[in-house]
Image (cartoon, rainbow, N blue to C red; front, side):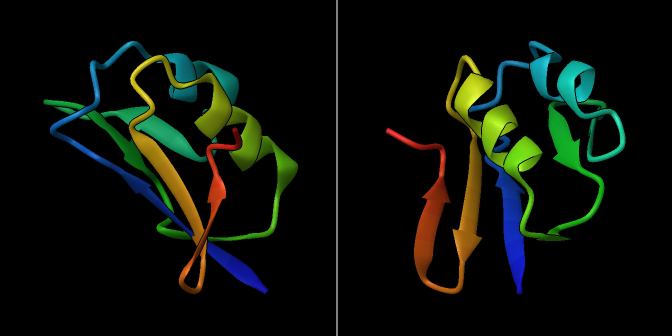
Amino acid sequence: MSWRVEVDGSTCISSGMCAALAPDKFELGDEHAVALQPEVDEDEEVLDVADSCPAMAITVTDGEKVVGPRD
């Protein structure tokens, strides 16, 4: 199974938290952070990054179901 990872560019504040926690999965672009791979294998690290985003700009989905950030 794979998850879809999206960074909302209008919400992202470019804190760099995602790139610091998972540099193999996120990087800071010119205007905001970007997911290096829009689809990833199920990975707890991706959920931890989504949970840690101060702007809550990272969404992880499994089909139609949102799995991250977690409440």
